[in-house]
Image 1 (cartoon, rainbow, N blue to C red):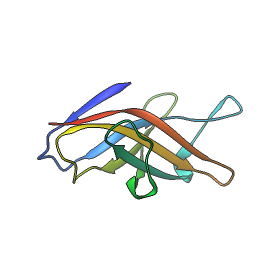
Image 2: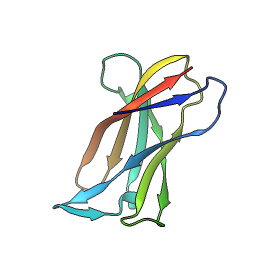
Image 3: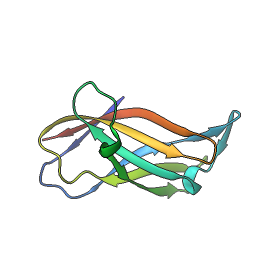
Amino acid sequence: MEVLKFSKLTDEFVRVPTRGIDSGNDITPTGYAVSLAFVRGPRDPASGDWIAGSWETNANVTPSRYFAIAKATTLARGDYSIWVKITTINETVVRKVGTLRVE
C-alpha cells in the first residue's frame, strides 16, 4: 500500500485512487457517496472518524481514473491508516487503501 507524506502545516486534499467494479466491469463510482477516515493505530474506523469526501475525475486516460478526496487538516504528526467508504443503494464498501504520514 502506498504511503502519502504530508507536512503538518499543509491544508490540501488527500487524493486516493478509487476503482468501481460491478460484475467484473468497470463502473463510474462518482454517483455514490464517499467518505474517508484517517485512523491512528491498529483499529477499524469508528462512526466519528469518517469525513465526507468528494470525487475528482481524470478522464484524459483510459480507463478514466477516479479519486476519493477529503482534507485531513486536524491531524497530529504520526502515521494514519487511510480508509475509504463508498455507499451505494445496495451496499457499503469499506477498504483500507494506504497510509498517511503527517510530518
